[in-house]
Image (cartoon, rainbow, N blue to C red; front, side):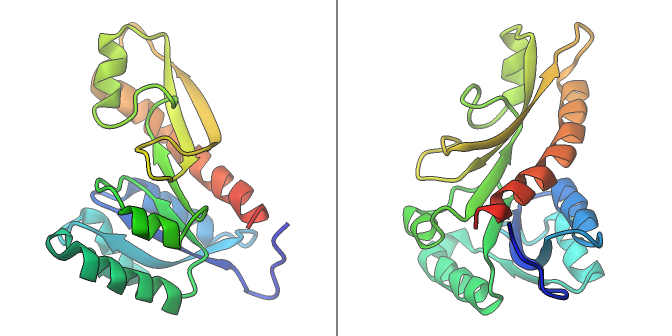
Length: 194
């Protein structure tokens, strides 16, 4: 169990590419009195990601990964992670693949949320594929990040029944609600093992 002395919350970084709804949700959780973590850094590969507004709103450090100069950029990010004493990286709608070298440096301390019941439907367009294949269930998974896409050890999953009336958009919204419940629980579970 993580011992919290005073306000010594575990410092985490969240990587985003878009709206940042999971980031916003994690921020809300981090402000709760009993929360074990604090978001210290927001990283994005997209300089115009909507979710970066939360960095400004809550005065959180932010950094952009430039994928045209990936080696140099990842080195800068690693330096920033160390400076901010980041103990856990949470990918939340991060649409780029981290290099093997980067993953090695933070081995066992990078987690991701994926909108399917892994190991099924790795990669993109999960909701569309699930509906096209007439699955009865979908859901979301929080897993450790390793060198293979969406293949790391599963931390937690939540199953969601697919309704006959589901469109891609309806299913996406219902699963996103479950993601918002699942991710903080998964972080709590991971932090107890750090």
